[in-house]
Image (cartoon, rainbow, N blue to C red; front, side, top):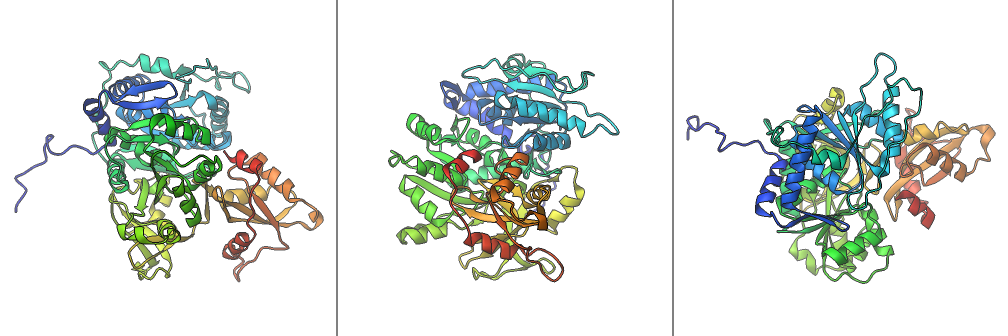
Length: 573
């Protein structure tokens, strides 16, 4: 059939964008609850109106199309609203990891160059230090223009927070222009500044950083098209039905909440927002709001289990990922009434790339076998065109489906990132022909399910956070007693895995204690990045070319795993 006489029209070809879910929700679910936060709640009609006003206000701040707008905030109504309002203003949303310290936040601000920075009152001190540090990075050839600072006070219990006076010499350069979120929303003029239409679905909708833990973090750019398709694919594969009650235990800064920020609008769900995923807050939400769904890194399972509550009155569907959950942990948490679905993904894949879809015939298997099958990464997301495990990157030969032959996991599809911001070299290196190279090593089982066996990039995933072993090693080398250092992942009963440091000391420092090294790292790094164990060695094992053999170190770390103290666990939250 010749389709040339059937051209694309405005009526039959509309750019795909997740922000289209919001006006539909305002129409189809107008009086249904959209957001709950403490004693505050909104309907979908109200959320749409607030997002329209916020989008107008952002445009009134001279934010142009494709400008970056950053936000540093926990899971609050404001952060949820910004997932729609920022792209509705034609801008690109950059949700910053709230667990980072000022130097790491400064590196992101310097790289992203946001026009506006929204900051929750809890993070004002970190943000102001980061802004000043980001400017000091550019004191050579030019001085960077600071973004406007918008303070987000607590919507339920306003604190009246004020921004501390900037430090440094008073030349006016470090003075921070400050606005307030509530007032900004109120003054948005939607008549003069209606939402900007998405002109091209390939335009950027969000900018997320792979870790934000190095001096040059990689900024991953999402397209409207990729975010839209990833959202719908996850809702379908996870089996999210009509009007779910979703608990925000997963940070919204994690790949935009694995696309469920936009997904809850698509299915008319209620977003239950909590500032921190403590056991008390989560169990209170289960009781008060009838939570049906939540996402969590495996670390949250331990928090829920330690609270020693009775089994839940109703089943809660849980999507987990970030680190492979131990089969025994899955078995324990499901006994409480959590029905767990395991997923695999990464920032570059717009969140979820694989889902361990459950097969009914597995229900008859013993609990331990069911947990083992559920711990696998699964089959490709529906938004992918294809996924494979490649044995040889030169020939792009696939591994056999034997559950034993190792290869690199590769992806192809519309939900793969546009690329790395301002880094064409890294972008080109991430792709090989039709494939995106994940850097993760895995196998394919006879039933087609993928299971990760190792990480070729030596990235440590702790509680869902990516940690660069190279940066931790660089910090260790700053200690005057350290001659050599290597950092590998060590299994951890709470965080999935944590950094373990192997250190060879200089000859004159043979009496240095483990706690001294640990304390040194905690003073220089965010606590989640600091090693949880130091193993002293005479020298690091190396191959014939002088490269450190990290496989051998990982094996040794696994044998030496120890359970952390309660204090150590608390310091990580």
